[in-house]
Length: 124
Image (cartoon, rainbow, N blue to C red; front, side, top):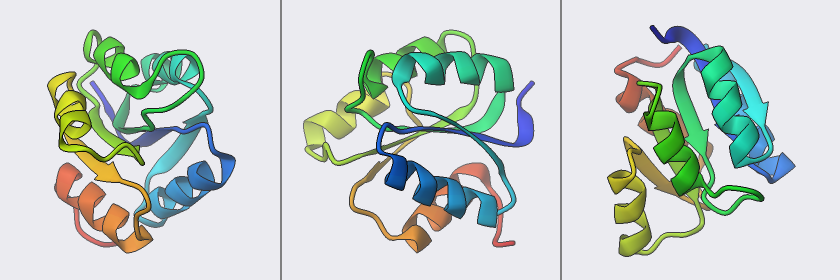
C-alpha cells in the first residue's frame, strides 16, 4: 500500500530536483530524492510513495527503464519530467508504465496542477 503523503523525485540535475521538490512540498507531500535511476528504483521500493517523478536522461539506467522496473513492484503514480519531448518519446514513456509526461522547461504552477490532477487532490 502506498504512503499517501510521500513522493520520490528522481532527477540528476540538482537545481531541477530542488524545484520539483519545492513544488511537491508546497502541496503537502513529503519528498525524498535520488540523483539517478538505480537509486530511484531502490528509493521507491523503500518509501512506497504515492507519486514518483522521473527524468529520462540520467546516469546509469534512464527514466524509461526505471519506470519499467518500478512497475514490476509498485502502484505509485509515475510522472516523467523530461526535456525529451517528441511524440515518440512521450509515447514510449507512457508505454513503459508512466501515468503522465511533462516536458521541460515547465512552470511550477503547471507541475502543481498536473500532480494534483494525477493524484485527485486540490490546492493546499
